[in-house]
Length: 97
Image (cartoon, rainbow, N blue to C red):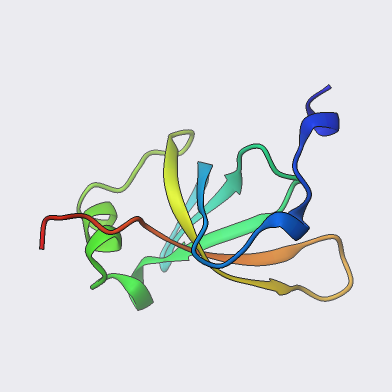
């Protein structure tokens, strides 16, 4: 029963690193599903955030749909009245530059 062990979205905080599964590629970036949490919409806008060190690395080698990656919660906000919130994700920084 995967839903029983899913962590509540109320635990998500800006700056947290989360495991996420890439669900689609979009012209502006990609969408993902957060592993271990209640179902939620999540995305990374690689156009807007593409110069950030971790995001730049992801843009160079876009993870395929189905890949599991570590991402950072950038912003959490309610999305209309559905049980859906918008998670703006980014990538962990690296020591590359």
